[in-house]
Image 1: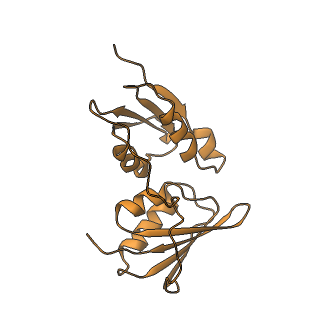
Image 2: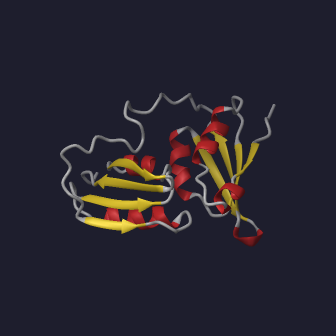
Length: 174
């Protein structure tokens, strides 16, 4: 018996300037064994693909009219529940002893996925051990697993109601 995928439309959240990552993770946690997730977004959520792959899901994506995207995440047949992440909270690596930032980026006022693309391009052009300081108007929750998967570290400080400062320490290249 095939279970129909659960549908989650995050377009209203994105259009309001919000970050839908927590709602996506909540929806995944509520899926039945073998059930997939149908996600509707205002852009192709490529950073989410790696996160979902680590959770045992494959994906298929297609463009919809008006620039929106539909992504179907399907659990792998042998996907076992993933263990909890490392002890530190995503985005809260210990920044004690990090050098002063050598590069700074202001990502405020940009719509996803632009802040992540700009940040990752900057990080990839930096040397191991260098620190990048980024400003955001919402916490970049999808950025943390992407940085971690590439061996980088991140520390986030909330400066105000919609102002976040993220320090990224570039890890060693694999």
